[in-house]
Image (cartoon, rainbow, N blue to C red):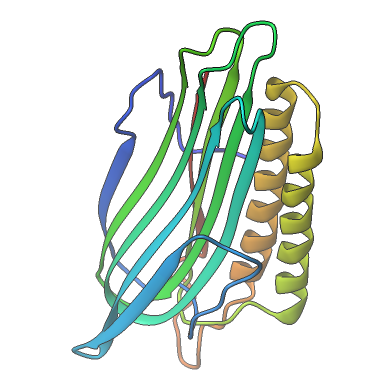
Length: 232
């Protein structure tokens, strides 16, 4: 899987992307798979909606809770849009543990957004931050994955695709029980993100093009992935 290049070396403000999407971007309605910490809303506007989605995962490990893990896995499916603002964030902190008894803090947030419309004004923000505060020997890892699906015409994820995504979500939850080194957890999260990308690419490829559409001028389905990690 190819990720959008994103090397974040202790930069605390993350990254923001602004784009105008020419063409149609994916699905109708609003769906959420699994428990999430995010919120989403959409309002009508001149034949298209304005959508806002905000998802996050946050952890704080300390002497009272030496090992903390949280994940967010959210799927937002929107209809026709004029504009969209989507934000995804993971933050992980470890605080005031000792070298003899260090803490571990892991936060992973997966956000999937599908939209439909022409000339959508898109503001996509994906952030991560990890830090150890007075915490020698502690480990903190924050990973944010944002998937934006672009297709020629609106469609909805099939029941099969939703089941596949639910399986990935359960595997992500299972990482919370892992005692593997942080580097291995990061690799496993990347592998799960690759599975999500494959599911979405397959789903987008099946999106309808509609009658009378010139295939040569039709926008090809696309899945854009934003990935950013911070680790201490």
